[in-house]
Amino acid sequence: MRDDPVVVALVARAAQGDQIAWNDIVERYAPLVWSICARYRLSGQDVEDVGQTVWLRLVEQLGKLREPAALPGWIATTTQRECVRVSRASRRPDRAAAEPDDLESVAGPVVIEQEVITAETHAALRAAFAELPLRCRQLLTLLMSDPARSYLEISTILQVPVGSIGPERGRCLQRLRRSSCLAAYIDNAV
Amino acid sequence: MRDDWDDDRLLAALREAMAARQAVPAKFIETGKNAYAWHNVDAELAQLTYDSRHDEGALARIRAETASVRALTFSSARFMIELEVTAAGLLGQIMPPGGGTIEAESQAGGTTIAAIDEAGGFSLDPLPASPFRLRCRTADGSDVVTGWITL
View 1 (tube, chains in turn brown, cyan):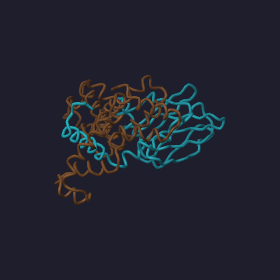
View 2 (tube, each protein chain N blue to C red):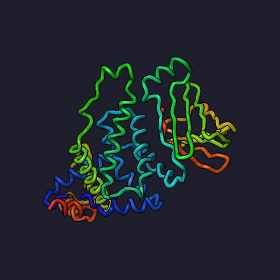
View 3 (cartoon, chains in turn yellow, orange):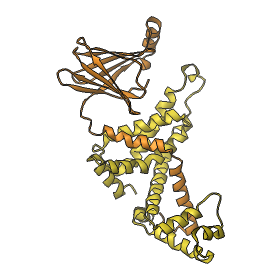
View 4 (tube, rainbow over the protein chains, first blue to last red):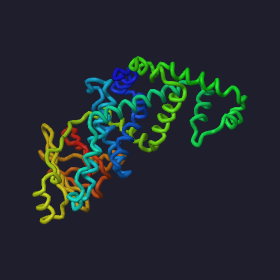
């Protein structure tokens, strides 16, 4: 999983000045940064500060990363460090003694590793989804809606027979499963 | 994705993946994309070498004696930049002394420019939006940028 060629290629292009590749990196990993910040229950401004610092550090590190494939791990560790720094700095000094460090919020390597794996799986799923034909994306989006929609509602919206929705759902999910974006994950799981 | 995941499980995973992305505000992503403007900024980096915030004794002294609330020092191979933060603004001194310009560049995007006098002194008022960094361009052509400063 750590050898995701997509990530390695994005880092190489961004290091050479490709803003599009950089944008893809941000799109791909912003949810990871965001979810770690959520764990620390930081204020909105503090989350913004952490995000800015993480991305600026990464900009400085592009081209210096010894192992571009380890990027998600680097992002997770840097985000966690910044969250700890910001949450300590924003704590008022007169209350610091009464609020000892919440050690449980400083996750160990196992938690971080799990967050990275989840973020990578999510990113790969989104990439695979983006490559599906429009019909599939429409159908799956409707099938994922919350609150859930009935097949009857979906058939009305898409103007297709109710009976075609089940089989079409299966075909679309099979295409998703077979996507090259998920190839690294299938290999890893076997 | 595990090949043995059935349709329901795959769809549930996809729903989770989409929800994780939708939870992130557009502004957060935009800020990340804008950070790329700092790629290949070719200047000498001055790193933080002193911060009164990490020096309890100094903090008490500064508060008692002057209107300054924080003192910072940044050093590079050739330059030292001393800063004093007060409620009113920021006072600075670059050494060795010499004229030039100083820019305060906020991560959020704003830039404030002020002159550095012949003695190496400068002031910025009001304070730049945190976090920011300072970029000194001296009359003799040197370009020095500090690490990020959060007040």
